[in-house]
Image (tube, rainbow, N blue to C red; front, side, top):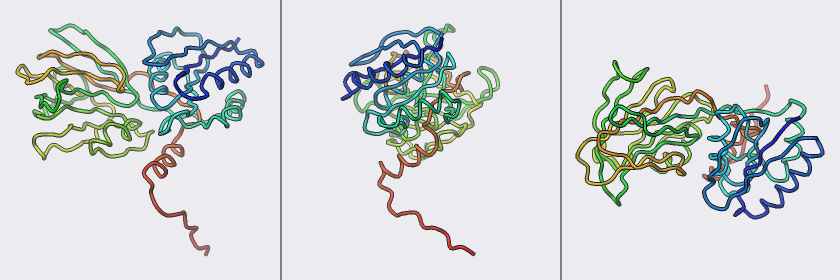
Length: 290
């Protein structure tokens, strides 16, 4: 028997009603349904056994669902009840048609690069997490510059190439999906969401020569927290999970073994969102026929 899970942001208008409608339709198809509803930050774990996950909310709900389901290889069906919709690409009125495409094996899938961050402290791993948007190392105080050493290499450890010391408010390491989020606000480039690349973007760097860089997804970044800091330092994953860092901590960031899989939320949704949200002018002009 197929099984679905619903991630429902109860603060979104009509989310509970839509969840009931989806549950009723799925049960007609003999699909068992589990529902996790939340109003603030979700805090539950999910076990394997699901075939599909529905995300009812905005892009933030999709981020949580993707981090939860990607390790299990379960696709996320992102229904947009938010305002931005760079990731959540299915309109509430269209969900049933897209769902039946999925049942018939005709649904479009978008595979998204995810990053894994691992914090090593005194030679021991203390934190590990994945992101669909970005991993950020930043000052915990207001307008405080921190000092970070950055290296890059194909694997962790020996042979990594030292890029330099970054004196800034912090560093953003973003995926192509996350290129429209915090990284864009910090002056970073916009990347096609299905590219295999990551962005290293300093936040308000003290040295203006430190510019955003687009790096191969197969590389590993090492960010080291220097000993003397004027502020505390935080690790933030997808803007939703935070961990305090200590001087001497080493953060390794690399491609996650499993990608995020989104249903009906491909490149066309991304580019349409760009045109709409950024108010790009003009209308398509048909090329003259020979």
